[in-house]
Length: 296
Length: 290
Ligand SMILES: Nc1ncnc2c1ncn2[C@@H]1O[C@H](COP(=O)(O)OP(=O)(O)OP(=O)(O)O)[C@@H](O)[C@H]1O
Ligand SMILES: [Mg+2]
Image 1 (cartoon, protein in one colour):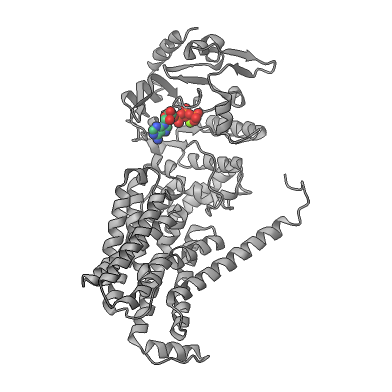
Image 2 (image 1 turned 90 degrees about the vertical axis):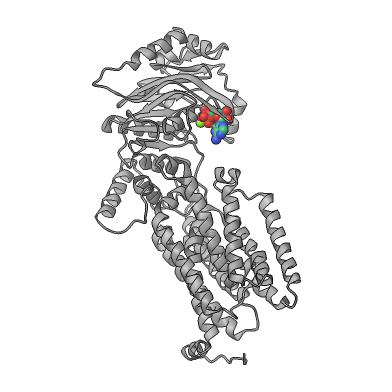
């Protein structure tokens, strides 16, 4: 690729970028993944399952590396490994009882081992060293049209399921005891959510890399939940933030020598810190003028 | 009066007249959890509109009793009928407030949305605008007014005080116009004025809407004035009757097998002395509250 030059005419820049098929694919794939991550991540933040989400994404790394080594293609490796891990976690009896919220040493050990196994597969597949950074920290190069189609199909299926179970899932996430008393199948919903989270982690990992999934899975939903406490608008804000993060990051990464994952994470993190700062400032202003004892 | 005759009295009252069918009928029920017997031979009847307190030491299985009425914990012996159905089949007519401390401070969901989930959170799909949605919003407003939570219903529930959260959860429990409220220590974590206010609120709703209330409590005094009956749960079973009959030295001593004295203060409050509820254990649970 010849070094592209940035002009201040952003429309012309975008047109220039989109004349390259791989950049079009990158924007398509990034947008599809952002929408899914924003919705599933919104529930994940509410359910305090970030650790599980990260583990599932990290497990995708050896999956992808092994699939490349075996000549099966990285996409299959991501999905197969993440979904298998989700089914294992869902089958653990202790996990189900605590709503899979346990952040135990076991999960940390699994993460470490997954990384180690991934490195082994990369070593076995000689001449793939450049790909390591892409698998771990993301890349916008080499996204195929087939990959975009796969991402779109998986996203559509998962979002259709969310449309079907969204409300009871919210109930079970906020208040599992009362939801169970209201006849909500909290255990089954928890397992179903883990599977959807695995599919999402597998998708996000293909854009951000296995280690930086939080750029899309945690930061936009967490920022959105700070901006508004109304569930519907909060989800919408999350989607907009995630998509904007992907677009800006792709745009910047195209002109910069630094990896996509860095830009994605920096932009999402910057938005979160700014929002949290404004929220803290507002809270501080609201509290400050009140003399001691003025509040009942 | 000995506990045995109390229990007989309870069994007699099980043959309730047809015009007043029992909302809850627990017959010689027993529960085993993790291989450990929690309680057995428990008989309880609650009629429509009754306000009943469930008392007993920590760990005796009061919460378990409410859960087994809801069908969340299976019985190992005996039978429970809820509104004439097996447990779990009539839960839409029951409002439930589980035992808890508070919501996590970082939970970014409004009290209003929590109440709404109590109304239609069990329905599949996602809420779409329309007639049903407008009716739900109106009902939620009504419930917020009922528990007087207008000032804070739109703030994130995690940032509210324990008492405010408790009022919102009571509103949530009332959302589907239940015929029975199962409240597990709703006065826990409230200060004395709030205990009195929430107890009065529950009794007002119980009377105004004809809702029966089964309330687990550690201190009977805040609700003593409103109670129709108390159920004292011990490992041997349940003893039930009007407070003046059950909360007596003789009954409690026989139930627990240790000497227990019940004193009555000049303003009619009851003080149970020598409860088999270790004070250290009790204050542990309440995390350093005064
Ligand atoms: N999920 C569970 N699995 C197994 N055993 C349990 C479970 N929950 C409670 N138990 C056991 O059942 C017994 C009764 O518990 P329960 O919570 O019903 O007591 P309680 O009377 O409500 O006590 P407290 O006053 O402290 O709330 C306890 O010994 C407890 O250890
Ligand atoms: Mg309890």
